[in-house]
Structure formats: C-alpha cells, structure tokens
Length: 393
Image (cartoon, rainbow, N blue to C red; front, side, top):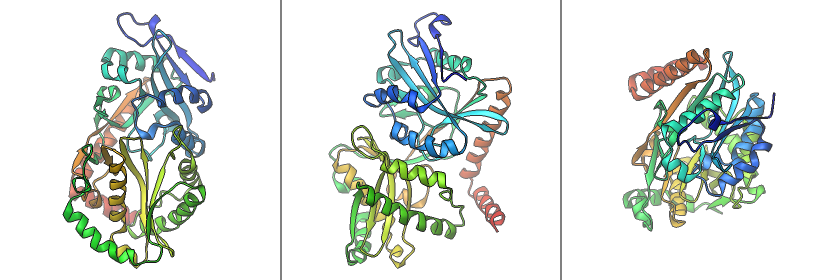
C-alpha cells in the first residue's frame, strides 16, 4: 500500500472549486509537518491537535489496529485548505474511517483554513468527498460523529453534509468578555459552594492547582487510575480506563506539549496533604476549555461537592484569562446543569464510499438514531439501565 495517495481534483472538476488536489497520508510522520502548519492559524477544536491525536494513535489506535487516514485538501497554489484527521479500522467486516481519538474527544472537526471554511460551498465539499472515495483504498464508510455545527462563530462545512443529530448534545456556557466571577457563576451557587469548601479548607495543605511538572502529572494520574474504577463500580458502570493502551494514551497526552508550550491535556486538581480530592482533565485553546475525564475522592470529603468546587475554580481561572466559553462533554449529567445553561448541538454523518458501505452506513445511522431516542426518553433510559445492570451481574 502506498503511504501517500493523491487525487488531482482539478482534472475531474470544472468550475470555481478552490480544491485542486486531495492527498491521503497514511502515517503520522508524514502528516505532522502540514498538521503543525495548520495548528498555527487554523479553525479547529482543541481536540484535533497533533500532540493529542498522535498520543492516541500511538497507543489506543495502534492497539486496536487502526491506521492513520489523514486527508489534506490543497488549492491551485498548493496551499492546504483542510486537514481531516481520520483513522481506519475494521468493524464487522467493514473498513470504517472515523475521527482519530475514539470516544475521548467531545468535538470532532477537520482543521480548516479559516477563509475557506467561511465560504466553502457544497460543491467543494463534494469535490473533497469524491476525491476521498477515489483514494479510499478499501475504506467503506466515513463515520463522522460528534461534529459541531459551528466553531468560533463559523459554520463547520462538513457538518452541513447529510447529517443527523448526535445521540447527546453538549451542555455548554458562553462567558462574555471581561465578565465578573458572579457573571460566570451565580452568587447563590458561589455561596453554597463556599460554605462546603470551608470544610475542605480546614484540611492541611488544601489547594487548587494546575499540574505542569511531569512528576505532578503522574502523581495525579496514579491516584486517578485507583479512584476512578471504584467510582465507576459504585455507579455500576464498566471501567473504561482499565486497558493499558487507554492508560498509556492519557499519560502520553497529559505530558505532551503543544507548540505554544501548554499540555495537550491539562490536569486541574484539588488536593490536600493526605489525598487527591478531585481532578478534572480538559483541553483548552485560548477561547474555550472543554473537560474530558474526572473523578473525586471516595473518602468522607466527597460529601462537600469537591467536583463542583473544582469546576468553579476552573471557570474562574479561564474566565480571568479571557476565555469566552466552556463545556463539560456530552451528556446531561446533573452536575453539568449547575453551570451550563445551553445545549450545543452536534451532528453525525455516515457517508458510504463503496457499494457494500451503503448498508453499513445505514446501519450506523439507524443505531445512532435509536440511541438518541432512548436517551431522550426517561422510561427507555431507565429500562436500558436495568438491562445493563442485569448483564453485569
């Protein structure tokens, strides 16, 4: 298999399309130079950085036998217009291309050259899709899930393709520039959390901090990998952090640095001298922070809502840096509603590339639609929980 496949779109299309060439890169090493070029000035979410997804591909991706399938579209002057970071794996006998990162990113989106994204036409998107189809080399379906409709006020062109709502929305919150702490978190919520925090403040060495030294990062992750499985067991949930590849990904991404020096995944924590009280991991890009995973102590200190206190600290931290929005990932968990007042829609697209892929795309679409129906119906959700509990006994 050739490591690089290229399709000259200009030879197949006439008209005003700015897409002249589409290249498929089959290794992270080949993709890295153009990826970093995009990161300097692209329209992209913080989940599509090279450091984060390279950490995933080298651990979880390789462990699951997924291979990079990075699509880059260029204009007639050989300037990159879009980078689509996909990985191809075999599922039920089909070759499915999905966004890199698996279930870990909240948002999936190509990296866009901003002016191209702002004015991209449906014809240009079809040029890209047709080019991918010609160079797919056995890929049956593009499963493009959890795509934001807009990012930083710009329409995401790929989300305008044939799509359907994702099973879950994303609870989020917009923060006005120069907002006060009370604008970001209400006075009543602050008062309630402050009363609880007084109990924690009495603990020796109590503090909020952001881990930057490798030793601190590994120390927090050591505690996380002990406490999180216990928390999930109490909720009768499977331990999604059990396998070694996932643990390796998290450690690698938390210690990896972005070109600007920040960590690919940032760790925020409340701790005291005797224990790690609460931890939240997030990605951030200068305008939005988005949480990824979290846990909190199983000691008596859990009664003082350390997770909510930590989120308040994070909101204040990023608000003071001028961030204008945040989210806590997919799903309408109760704790998210304390701070998030908006539901940000995300969409899925299942695009067949081969004749046999048409049936697979229909099946994936139907399954996602069924999940959405269940999650929106409390009675069906309760039934699903009962069935899940029964299967785990």
